Image 1 (cartoon, rainbow, N blue to C red):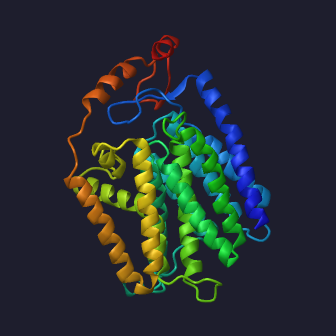
Image 2 (cartoon, rainbow, N blue to C red):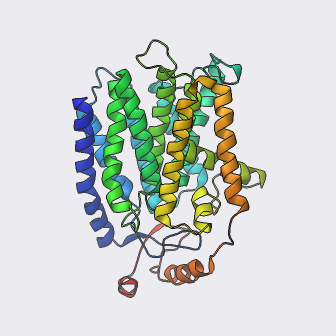
Length: 383
C-alpha cells in the first residue's frame, strides 16, 4: 500500500511540475492546436499535455514497479513508449488513419505476444469459455485497439477524457489493491496521480489539452488494466472474486466504449472509414442540448459511475443478462439524446474558426500540420 501511495504522489508531483514547462515550450515555439469548424475551442491551445502525463506516469512506475517480480512490465513500458511517440507525431504532424492504425497494432502486438496480456476466455459470456488461440488473438487485438481509440475519441471536451480516465484507473487500482496484485495497482495509481495533476490545467477553461499522446496512452493503459481485471476477478481463488467480470469490466469503461462502438458502426454503415472525424459523439450530443463543458464532463462522470454501480450490484445476474442490461440502458439513453437533439449551432463556430485558419503562418496548412506555429502578429491580435 505504501508503494501505491508513493507512486501516486510522485506521479502527481512530476506531472504538476512538467505541465507548465510544456506549456512554456509550446508558447515559445508557437505550437498550438488551431480551432476549426469541427473543434470546440475558440482560440489556439497547446495540445501537448500528454508529455506531462507520460513523464509522471512513466517515471513514477519505474521507481516502484519491480521488473524482476513482474518482467512483463518491461514490454508494457515499451508498448506505452511506442503509443506515446505515435501520439506526439500526430499532435504535431497529421498522421493518416492507416499510419495511426499500424502504430496501434504494433503496440497491441507487444502487449499480446511479449507482455502476454490477452483474452483467453469469455468466462461464460455468450456461453463461451476457453477460446481457440486464433480467436483469442483476434479478440485481444480488437479489444486493445477499440479501447485505445475510445479514449482518443472521447477527448473532445475540457476535462472529459482525463476525468473518465481518473475514474477508471482508480476503480481498477482499488480492486488490485484489494486482491493483492501489487504491480497493477501501482500502474493504476501512477496514471491516476498524473491525471489528477493534468486536470488542474485541463479543467474548463482548459489551458492545455492532453492531445493524442495522452489519450492514446490512456487508452492503452486502460486496455491492459481491464484485460488483467477480467482474468483476475473471475478467478474464484482470489481474495475478492467478482462474478460476471467481463460485463463489470465493460461497465467500468462504458461511456468511452459505447460512444466509440456507436460512432464506428454509424461510419461503417455510411461507407466511411471508422477513423474519419465527425461531430456525432456523446459530448457533441450533450453540447447540442445546451450543456457547457463542465456539465458535459460531470454528466458523463456521473453516468459512468452509475453504470459501475449497476454492474457491481447486478453481478450475480450472470454475464449475459448483465451485459444485455448495460447495453440496453446505455443505448436507450443515447437514443434519447439523439432524438431530442437540438439544431447544431455552428455559425458562431465557423465565424470564429475561419479567421484563425487564415492566421496560420506561411508555409503551414492544416493538411500538413495539426499543431501549427502562429505568427507574432496573430498572437498579438488574439490577445
